[in-house]
Amino acid sequence: MSSHISLRRLLAAAVVASGLAFTSTASAGGYHSAPCTYKTITTWEVVQQPVVDWVVKYKPCGTPYRVKVVSYKAVRVPVQKVVKVCY
Image (cartoon, rainbow, N blue to C red; front, top):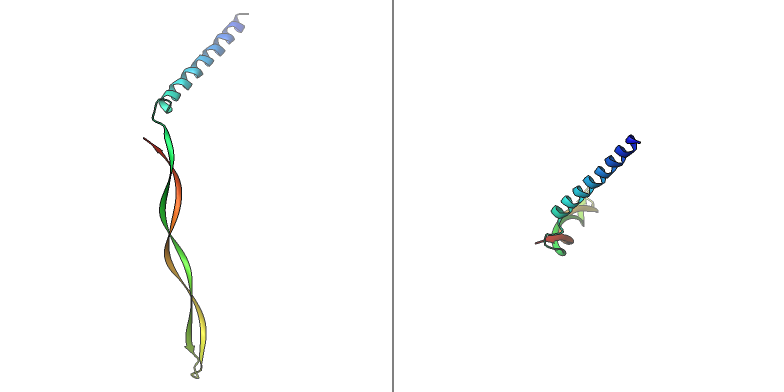
């Protein structure tokens, strides 16, 4: 019977310890801190955009022909993101 009582005491101590740990982390975590809001901000990202050009080249015999040449240019595009703001 005494082992049963010590098991109860051990469980009760564990419950109390977990309750104390929860309240200490909850108070430090932000229940008493200022409220946070979410705001939308605009940032810029660089994207490579393909550009198609037609170039005239010449065969060794001197006959011209057209060739499609694809190059890329860097373009800045706006990207909207939602961020958390806490005061």
